[in-house]
Every structure is written in C-alpha cells, then in structure tokens.
Image (tube, rainbow, N blue to C red):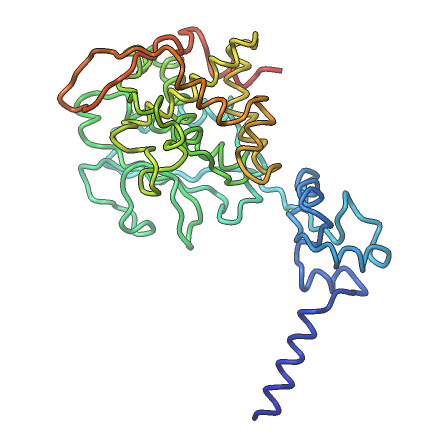
Length: 365
C-alpha cells in the first residue's frame, strides 16, 4: 500500500509538472482554454473572440515552435461558442397586467439602446437564457428555484447562475410609485455592466450610482418624470468628506446602500459630479455620460485594478477626483425630513438636462 501510494503521487507530480506537449489536444487536456505568454496576451485573445487562456509563460515558451504559430501571444486557443443573449421571464400571476406590459416594454426598449455585450458569455456563472423572476410582495416568493430570495438584485446560485430578482413591494402598486418600473431599468443596467466589465463591478459608487442614474434617465425619457425633479434628495454631505467610503457596500465596510446612501442617491451624485467635471473640459453632456457609464466599465478588464481604468479613461486619478469633489460648492439643502437624519446637500448644479436621453448617450459616435 505504501509503495503504491508513492507511485501514484509521483505520477501525478509528473503530470502537473509537464510543460512540453506534442499536440494542442494534449495541452488543452491540462489547459482547456490554451495558454498565453502574459495577461495582456490573454486579454487580446478574449478581444478576438476566444475564451480567456491561462497565463503560463514557461509553457508558452516551451511549446511556441511545436504548437505555433501563436495567435496574439497565445497557443491552442478555444473559440467562444457565441450564443445569442436572451432572457427567460418568470412572472408570477400576482403581478398586475399593466405592470407586466410595462415590464416587457422596458426590457425591449433597453435591449434596443443598451444591448448586452457578447462579453457576457465569458463570465463563468452566466447561463442562457438569463432568468428573470418577478412577483408582488403581497405573496410569498412563489419560485422554488430561488429559495429565500427577495428584494431586487442580480443574484446567483449553482442551478441558475446569475439571475434577476424583482420582488415588487405591494405598496408601490398601491401608491402608484414609479419605482416599480424604474427598478427594472436599474437591474437591467447591472447586467449590462456585468457583461462589459466581465463582472468586475468596481468601484461600488459607479456600479450602483451608474445604475441609479440610468433608471432615472429612463423614467425621465419614457415617463416624463424622475427623482431628478426633486433634486435627487437626499444626498448625504458625507459623500464630500469621505467619498472613498462609497467604494464598498455597507455590508463590506463601506457606505453604499447605508443611511448615507439612501436609494443610492449619494453614489449617483458622485457619478453626476464626475460627468460635470468632464463637461468642464468641453466634453458634451452625452459623451461625458457615455465615458462614465460605458467607456470606463468596458475598460476595467484591461487593468490590474479599477483605479488604473479610471486614470486611463478620465485622465485623472481617483484621489484628484475625490479632492475636487470635497472642494466643490454644494450647499446644504436646509431640508429636514423625519425619515432622513443628517445633512443633505443641494446637487442641482450637476443634474442632467431634461432633454437628455439614453439614446443620445449610448449612440454617441
């Protein structure tokens, strides 16, 4: 028994240490998506429509001649099987017919303006069709596939992979709240972000603030009203004194989603303030929004961290942005409400134009 164990161990070690291969099929038995000589080469392969190869400089070098010529610095690549992105709706009968009709319209409108990038197929836990589960909170979660689910989010499990959850509060139907529709745009935009960024959802203030801005732009364009009309109240003054705290969710030690970021308003303000700074350079409003909501997100996979992408897209480092934010002129609103504690700031100077549309932003040449 002891001898047998030693032999098996040696065999495994030999297989793991192997760096030379006679055929791509042999290399792919160990590295199913091929090998790249560097992280840059791996990203180039993805850009060409291949699955991301493993970065193994030594293996690449030892097999370059036998298994070459290389493709963009990689060997034995696997082409991504392109699947058309599609949703599958799971809409409970507890939802009113008019909500269901608007839901389908919103998804179709966003699909036309913000089609989901093919990059989404490189995200490991995304399966087709992408499932959406929606129900009225007046009834318990009716879907056994997502036990314990509630609220609104892009969640995931082993069975379904990533999926959208829309538990619409009963009060939003009773009170005719526009949020019962805007939340659809918010969660859709998260899928858009996941695809473009290859699931690098950082920093959180751009992730959630961007989705908040998109949902309000959607209702402004299609319903003629939004929370911008009320000045995006409340935006906490904390965002000026401690903007770095909005890089993470409250559950992770940050402030996004906390009482300092009700409805992600403070995160949205940071996005709007960044857009305003870009406009001050002479960049058009639509183009500035595109840079923040699209260019930055798509740049994320090409950098070691989000700060590098920020510098590359905006020609500004993060700390300079935070400093400019803190020194900006955003007076107190002077408004007090029982449901909001703390100081709120007036952000009227950075709110988007009433005429701005999603089509204008995402159709910019």
